[in-house]
Image (tube, rainbow, N blue to C red; front, side):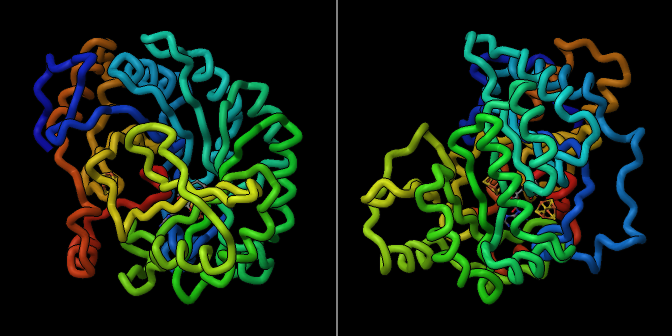
Length: 352
Ligand code: SAM
Ligand code: SF4
Ligand code: SF4
């Protein structure tokens, strides 16, 4: 990738399609204690797989500094992810460092985290006390056998549910529960998940299976679409659509008429939302990506470690964003997915 032209820092920073740099996803580890077949299949992420060495990882101080620079450029929301972010040692220290940052407009930073929930029982209270605002927990099935098969490490569903309870007890509210739906694998879990989470206060979100990375065996036919999910739910319950929380929200929001559940549909494949995609991703080793499906990242770690001052870092990130044209999901077909297979980056590295 050519070096971006410096000097484009602006409070009205926009990419080539007019999109702001509103959200940053930060991957704090490329490792995970699960082997979900749609993300880190065992056949690839096996004993011989070489994960990043400790020295390659951005330190908490480096992440804190970069996030501060992103806030200068208009970013208002930061999501900590991975890999499994709760595997990163002393993560609560990073949360505490980031929670103390404010946006230039004086708004508090919206700081959130996505986890598989396996370590939540142990960590929820510390995360809350460190200042984490919100939490998303991934859970693909409520049936123990289906869940164990999907995480592929025999992890019991009861322990994730216990982690969710721990998060409740720690004071987290509006917890989101993410379910990736794969045809032939777990679509029969949609209604049982709904029954389980009705009256829980959690927001259930159904995500279409995406062709991220190059190892998850994705085909268009394995996508159980949001409209199919909606049809299924409507056949059983009375529901109504809710307004967007904010312009460009990726989930379409729905609620049960009896107030027992809010759920969201994330139609990343069948109804792509690239036009309003305001997300950048920072990989575990400090490369910046402008799209989940990008093949090359911008090496911010070298700039950080090379002594680049904040102003120049900001200029470099602004220039990177300014030249952004990504809209992969709008262009995706079965053919583009397999054509690009070799170049795509794994989600566990770039941050889901
Ligand atoms: N390990 C954490 C977790 O599972 O919540 C955080 C990282 S994970 C990569 C972030 C999110 O990406 C999870 O909700 C996961 O279900 C989702 N994800 C991973 N691979 C996916 C795929 N191929 N299609 C759609 N969503 C995917
Ligand atoms: Fe791990 Fe999350 Fe990927 Fe599953 S989706 S393998 S829990 S990083
Ligand atoms: Fe954003 Fe890329 Fe996904 Fe489109 S394909 S919504 S540009 S991350």
